[in-house]
Structures are given as C-alpha cells and as structure tokens.
Length: 477
Ligand code: 4AD
Ligand code: MG
Image (cartoon, rainbow, N blue to C red; front, side, top):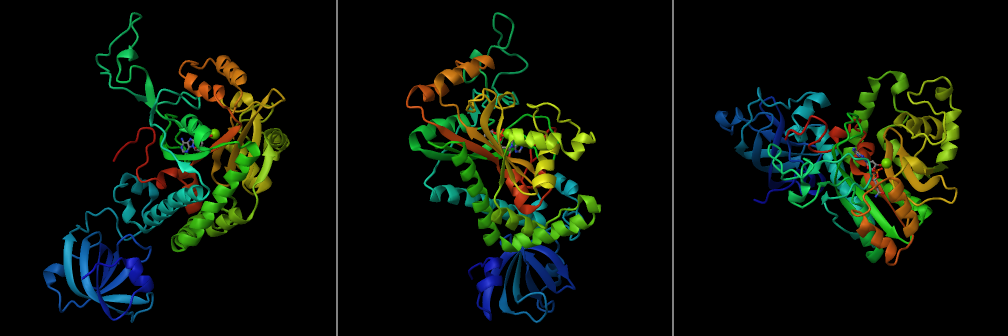
C-alpha cells in the first residue's frame, strides 16, 4: 500500500479508502487515539486504534516520540476537531521511544530548554512550523530572482579578503597550532599554510558577486556567512545565511526599489503558501505577548504585521534627516538612549533604529546616504564629500534587516579610499580590475536570511529560526 503524506490525507484524499502513513506519535490518549505527525502539516492525523484487535505488547510501545507505520481505513471523523481519521488495522513500530526519557513531552517547553535539545526540537509544533516557513521563504527568494532573470551564483566560502573591513574573521588554516612554521621575524609563516596565505571564512560574497554582475548583469548569492563578532544578542549569529543580489547599471534608487519589491514579494508568497503555519505562529505570539507588560506588547499580531509590510510603502529617509529626528527626540533629550545622539556622523545603534521604526515612523524605513566614516570602503562617494550612497532597511522588532549600497565604480576614488583605510591593495587588486576594465555604475545589498525568518515567524530569538545555531561558546550538534 502506498504511503500517503498526512497533509494530503487531511486536504484532498478520498474517504472510505485504505491508506498507510508513517510518522511520530505526538500523543496517545485513552489507549485509543494516536495523534500522528509526519512533518508535512501542522495538523496531526487522528488514528483510532481498536485495542481489542491489537496486541497488548504493541499497544504498550505507542509512546510520545515513537515512530510508527500504520495501515488503516480513512473515514469521516466521528469526533469533533478533525474532518477525517484513520481506523487503524495494522501497526508496525519503526522505532521505540521511552516516554520517561524523551525530552519533548506533550507540554509547553521553554525555548531555552529546547535550544539544548536542538536535535529533537523539530518534533515540536512550533519548530516544525518555523522551519517549514523558513523553507518556503528560501524557495520564494529563488523564485523572485529567477523570475526577474537574475542568475544564482555561488561565491567562495574560503577567502583571503575581509569584505566588510570589520575584522570579525574566522581563520581557516591547516597549520598545527602547537608547532607552527615561523618566518625570520618569529611570526607564524602563512606562506607555508595550505593556501600559501592567510585565509578566513567569508563575511560576505559581495566582492565576488560584483565581479559576476559585471558580466552577467544581474546576479544573486544565497549562502552561509561567518562573523566572529562576540555579540550575544537576539539578532546575531556567528554563522548565518545571507542573500546578496548585485546588479550592473543600478543606482541607489534602483537598488532601494528592488530591495523593497523583494521583501514584500517574498512575504506575500509565504503569506499565501504557509497560511496554516503562520496562523499557528500568530496565535503563539499572541499568547506570549499576553504574558508581557502592556508597554512591551506588540501593537500588531504576526499576520497583521506581515500584511502591513506587504501593503504599505517603506519610508525613505536620509541619515541626516534621521539624525535630526533622533537628536530632537524625547528619549534623546531625556538622556534615555545609552548612546546619545549629539554629533552628526555617529553610528546608529539598535536603540535608535528601533525608535525610528517603532515609535516615530511606525513602518519599515530605508535609511540612505550615511556618513562615509561609518560605512565600508566600497560604497560610492556622494558629491558632498562626506556621505556615501549606502542604504539600510530597518524593520520593526528586528532593526537592520538589509544593508547595501551603490558601489564606487571610479578607479581613482576607490584607490584613494583603500589607501586612506590602509587596506591591502594587493589583496584587492582583482577587485580594482573591475574598475579598470568596463566599469559601470552598479549596486547591491545583503539581507540576513534569519532576520527575515524572525520577522515572518514572530520568533524573538534568532537562535530559534536556524536549525543548529552557532553563537559564542556554542557549537554543539
Ligand atoms: O550590513 P552587512 O554587514 O552588509 C554586508 O555584508 C554587505 N556586503 C551586503 C551587500 O551589500 N552585499 O550585512 C547584511 C545583512 C544585515 O543587514 C543583517 O540582516 C545580516 O546581514 N547580518 C547578520 N545576521 C545575523 N547575524 C549576524 N551576525 C549578522 N550580521 C549581519
Ligand atoms: Mg550593515
């Protein structure tokens, strides 16, 4: 008998037909009702056991977490709560589960506890919903770009460059730390390392994506990214996934338009395709919100928030305008910000970004034309001599979700920046070639995929939207 997925049985299958299903037991009530889940749906299939027909020794093994193969007859359900149910004829136990030992009990567990059981937390309703939405978002990303004629490219994971210049690199080396080769000055000699030079895990595929945009026109990467920043926040991972489109002949405004269309487009897609999961997550968030003090509660539910973003334009504001708003804001005047806003040029912290998005504009905001000093070397200089054509997209509850810019395409100017910042011009000589041979105005941005998943699922900690999070002092699993 062909094995059917539970979601198809619940949605579109013929009743009064024999089916077999396989999955894991969520609960077993009254020696009669198995709630079975196979990951294909947020809903369980109710499977009804006639205990007179099933051996006692088998019945005893139907415990939470056990894996079963069931054969039975699908009928219209007699009970309320489900449309159909399976009258079980045959039970095969794939794998037992000791109910006293299985960590995922049929009760509410804290996310902190579940992070320690990251290998089993996918058996919970919430994590299964989050990960199905994550998968759908990932597909939507590819669909969006493929339909627009962008090419998907894979940029290297091991590189010699620090694209963001922030120095938050994980070294890649095969040198024996106990007995490293040394040069004449007594320093580790990386010429003798595997690649004959110092290498690290990539912090961004942008520089390589630029090279491909200046040949294929419009490209995107979607891959793992690594940052050794020691931030224990709800928005930072040491290993995260980033989507980086890069487009020839785009200026900053084209870039902002694309980024906005991209975000609303993929959110629309999951809103339509993951409605059951999102409805569950919406209710979960509402319950969690109820436990918070009134002032901390979210003004909108999850589905409402997603619809709001889909249906409303993002507000576009220059850094200078945002600076003025923040400088004159109540929390700044009352010295409530940890980092006071008192000088044009200061970097904006998450408290400022959240004030702009959540209190002042109350919608997603695109900030552009940032001071050159606080942004990376590759951003295009503006005529004013002090700002660059950067743009960040800020989201409610998340803060920065996208960072991007128009790129500096003029050779002399980018050479000057590299010199001023004392970057390794030799290491970047290939990048400068892109400005030597057929340079064009071009732009791109990077979106942190997990931050998007956070927004779409309403999960407050980024560690709960990636299967096995990597954070400082934590690389279990
Ligand atoms: O703003 P960032 O550093 O920009 C870049 O890396 C550019 N090279 C992108 C480009 O223009 N192609 O990072 C981009 C985004 C951030 O807006 C944020 O969403 C996410 O990546 N991000 C992180 N997400 C999770 N954990 C971290 N540690 C992150 N650091 C950045
Ligand atoms: Mg950034």
